[in-house]
Amino acid sequence: MNSASNAPLNHIDSVSNPLVKELRELRTPKGRKEQRRFIAEGERTLVEAARVGWRASILLVGPDGAGTKLTAERVIHVSNDVLSKVTGRGNPQPLLGVFAEPAAETQGVQQIDPSAATRWLMLEGPRDPGNLGSCIRSADAVAAGGVILVGDTCDPYSVECVRATMGSIFAVPIFRLSDADARELLARWPGESVATAGDAPSDYAAVVYRAPAMIVVGTEAEGLSPALRAACRVGVSIPMLGRAESLNLGVAAAITLYAAERAQR
Image (cartoon, rainbow, N blue to C red; front, top):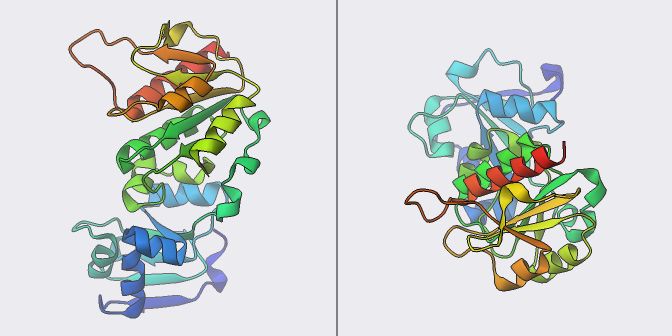
């Protein structure tokens, strides 16, 4: 986000304004698909977006955000009622940015460069946006090269997922692969490919995680598919020492990513 000097200032107070209705649709998968845009809320998240070079097309500024130094192509001062209408929240953040989704052609298997990082995360079929957002945040924390989504997944640019990433959605490249492309990628992956599974023979802390390490995690309910698990060179498990039978996707991914980070020091 650059200087605000050339950004037109507008005011919208009515929730029936056509732009408000248009932006409200970004809460739905259909709206995001049609508009190829998504929304991000809160100063912390928007500052992170600006820091890594993302520029909002629209910045909505509520009464409590009037002193912000954030800018966008278009800055619009709005009422709290408008913010609530757009976000669907009774107590919305005072700042909301609208961003263009990355083009689909930037998210395919050909755009994945294993040499770009020593750690990567592949997720098969995540359905919960909060868990996915947590995984993206963990990938950011260990400087992963990207998060690779395989098969039918929830939308990483949904309001809930973006909120859960706490700004990391702007820092971590997201890739979307078919099952076949994911298996092909793992077959030629130059480093260790590590599948997490409750019945895997190796302890997660005892693996070498040769760089670039690809951590591959499935959902808590279903785990990894047999085909994707078989495509990995190593299988690891995280010991369950109490009564819990498993960890959720976000926790399992974070533990394994940090095991890789420690092993690669």
